[in-house]
Length: 366
Image 1 (cartoon, rainbow, N blue to C red):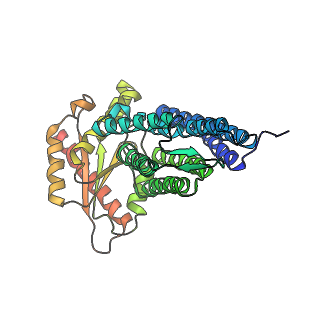
Image 2: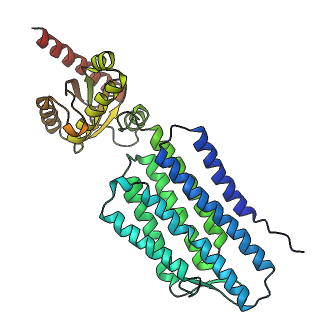
Image 3: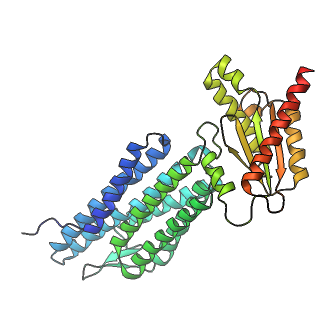
């Protein structure tokens, strides 16, 4: 009697998925749409891993007949349907920011899904030979690279560009794509289907870790990079040091918190952050480093930054798209001196900001 097979590499992949689910359960602060994304992809992978075991079972009891070959080809094609499904979930993650590129990607993913279903009857990209091994058809030469291109497009367009990605997360995304390429190459050259599911589970884990790190380095009130991200970008940055630092401090947070509640205070912070980020996006990167304190690190021209900040001051109010709040702040801008440490530059920009704050207060009182 043939026992139901145990594919330990698939069990390892399942363990990775369960690990991610347990981490999601423990990290309740992860955004709901990200939680939904990883649950959907994880469930799809678990079903695929089960089908892989079913395939192995029927392989062991096969009588080498045409019917057995057709059954194995059907199961194999059903397994590969998981790939366009996973790509679909990734595309839907940013459906609120849909554009032409996403529409084209969704169309390509739909074609891929159709080809997987068609492969059950017609060998579009693979078939089962008389030795019951999966072999690629000529169409695989187009489909395999097409899947990789589509996956890499989604990674760059819907993950890299949609989030504030730093060098650490960029490395994780690059290796995510590299592992996917290795899995596809192994399947194409050696028919190593098991390697595909192993690679996808590792990709799944790396994507989850990337999302967690993005969350850890993002201020959840304003949506801009937080103190953790600032520390990495400014104090621990490798290579060329940041030449210009601008320190901002809001003037009305206490008023909004005390008189209108902390929810309104949070909206005030968000309106300021989003307005300044929008106006200064070509000149540097904005971070929330404290309660009502923000920093801009920049490699741009000093005079251009100062001119843009003066325009912000003249606006007097935040961009209406982000709320009806005053745009009233103090700032200090410091240019790095030769040999000056990042800590000294930070303290000097902070001192200049407080000097500006005292001048603003003095003008209001006179």
